[in-house]
Length: 417
Image 1 (cartoon, helix red, strand yellow):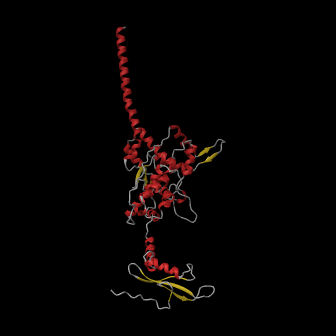
Image 2 (cartoon, rainbow, N blue to C red; image 1 turned 30 degrees about the vertical axis):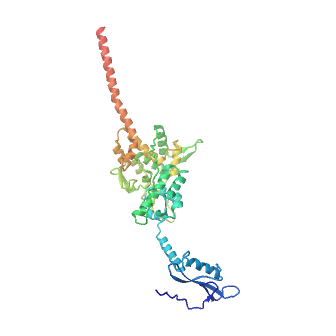
Image 3 (tube, rainbow, N blue to C red; image 1 turned 90 degrees about the horizontal axis):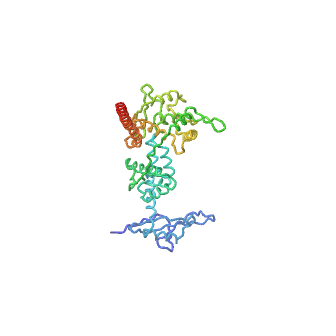
């Protein structure tokens, strides 16, 4: 097969003492006005392609010389360095790949865009920003190996509770599954094992604690040791009362709209609750009275509207009242471990379960648990009530026997006297 002739540009190229290295002279860019040499190399790559390429100028940053040009020629002819054309093509391919590269940061943005009202968004946002983004934000799922996840798990576990570690790893797995389901990119190439967490903590208040808390929530003020009164956050107080009367979750109360309240029929509609599907729960009389007396502020659609942001007209719900919740907890003298809103949901469930008047299926419906598994944590309270009820029969039988014995003794004694 005849060799392909290499067509050189039509210009006055000069040879150097190094084979395959030439230069072209042009108007100088140097201060002293000298002519500047631009160096070119001519070579053949291992795949037998011929190349004629520019490698640099005499007075540029690299300060190209015939010796340097010859070194570059040698590397490219041996295949250790790509030709200019191939390097440009590689950069174009890399830029194109980067434009469609689904890193975890990009997946997170896309994931949120499709779920504007997603549950636990604040927790997920924190977990991604503080933990997943620094570790994996600029990497695609297929680039992660099990050792990477193990290192992340161990580093978080040094400072955070097992439940937090589980939530972070669950979010990582969720984003990987999202990438696969949407056919955006390949998911993680291994299964993420979530740590086992015993988080079935049931919080409750005794009668004395309940009385103190109700007094604070009703009165709305707290008095310090010097007799000074401080007004507590009304929204926070009414949120806690609503959680106590209905067992609603904090997120459900914050997202509650006036249109979700059916005062006539006595029901509350929970939009996109934790279970996913809209749910309807009864509106107890105490909650009805509280909500009917609550003013509708600024024409907002939300029962607990957020603050107006300057130059913004969006109607948004309040995002949280954690600081106010803690202040109320302290004022009521409740333990620091008691979670105000979630604890009141547990208190609601515990009261109903221990009353002996509500079966577990009804309790499951009131708490909008998707399965009875979560409701089972309150079963022991109902069991205790059933035991007490069963003991009533025993006491009646014992009393009957005692009365019969006394009657017999009286009769026997009367016969002998």
